[in-house]
Length: 302
Length: 302
Image (cartoon, rainbow over all chains, first blue to last red; front, side, top):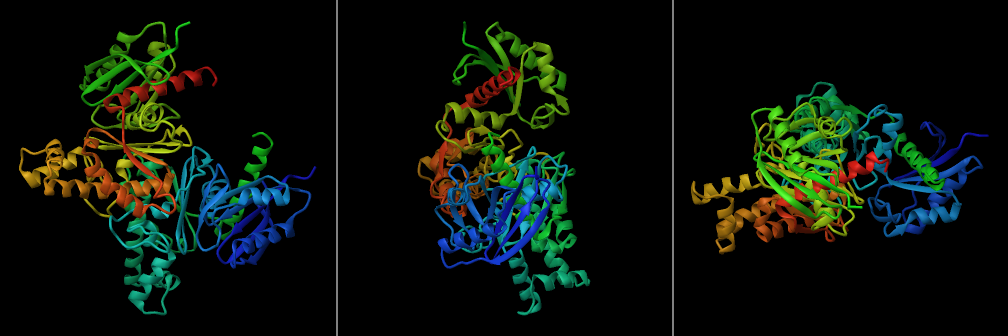
């Protein structure tokens, strides 16, 4: 008998990543296709075609990581970032079309699950993850189990009445307003001119530029405040930082560690490790696959 | 056959409250005794004697609500506020002494559980609670289940590099530094002189004093920022505010509602209700009793 496999789908604002995922989190037959953004039905058709391309008899379930807030009880997409998905029961739609068990999850939750099983979180029990890219997403594994709720850690307030948040969010002083590639690009342009961006800022810091280092340290300290809040809520032993802007590395993470230790309640602040993610851009896809395996188990009665 | 009953113990910094609790959360034979604070063994002896006084054959389990951070896997008390309990396996000690199943829980988590089952949270699915007293505690019920982790919501950062936190906490800008009876007393004394306190501040607000109202509104807005963070993490339909300082009522909660709606991600910010707790000072005791019932079920393999 062939080992059961699933299809993982990482649906993003620019591309759809798909692959066959095995239970240990390895990926075969990786594919990439642009996301059609004209309408909800166009997104669904694009996703369906991407699944179709990989489907064979060994596939026992499908999993979708999407940039959306979900109601897991109903399978309904409450709202999305960068793609036109809202008010749709994605899980039922895909289950009907392919007649397979389907799991759906927020993309940051999916990446968290992947790092926990197959990346930086292997062996941890409770782990918080933050993904720093265009925006800031998050997820948490509690006592070995992925928390399937919102976990919109980019939208915790770290500065009362602070900077306006991004996009459609009406909040102020949210972590996402301070610690993302977008925020880094803005700071870089203010300091080094309109051609600079987050990559350039990190490059300058690694070349020893004191202004670049101080800008990253300032972002790191605010990241540390956000992590401190999350440590006091979840008491994780590990915090994993992923997303493209994690490339800032210890220029960002050393100041974050310092402030996190100040904000976290004793005795655990000193025990918490902050590390970089290991799976890179594959995390969302692998996590979607793991969510598919969970859906297959649930369909088989647990 | 008599209905199974449990003993709930609410261990506080000044007194030990005990009572017989039934499964629906009603309390009989309420008792109150001062907390002996000389040593850990003195606390244990005091708690043991309080249990002894109520023990009879109908009692199937014991539950303890304590002002401490706990490791639920080991039953170990990691650290406490206002009482000398640390590094102790309270659960085993009590189980050995009384030969009954024992549940232990943080006091704010216990109060959250009580409000969920028998108070303001009846009928909710996901509910966050904050208790505003000397300090600020919190708890959360997720999809009908009490989250048994830290949930130290008083120690989320709402103001980066803000006011120093209370007691042994080294943090800055934590919710607890801004929204407690202690903080209210401090503001009242600055505004109205050294004889004023939190009660006086609330009294003056209800008599129409604009300064008092603005001080409470300022606290409420910061409370709203903290609640906004928690809404974006847990997506509750209900936030319950308990503790003595909840007496500030809508002078505090209306501004909190306004800021929470701004900080919470659409579409849910508008749906979240912020209400006062209903069980008053009995919440901790009732919650301890509910934790005891859970321990009894677990001991029976359920």
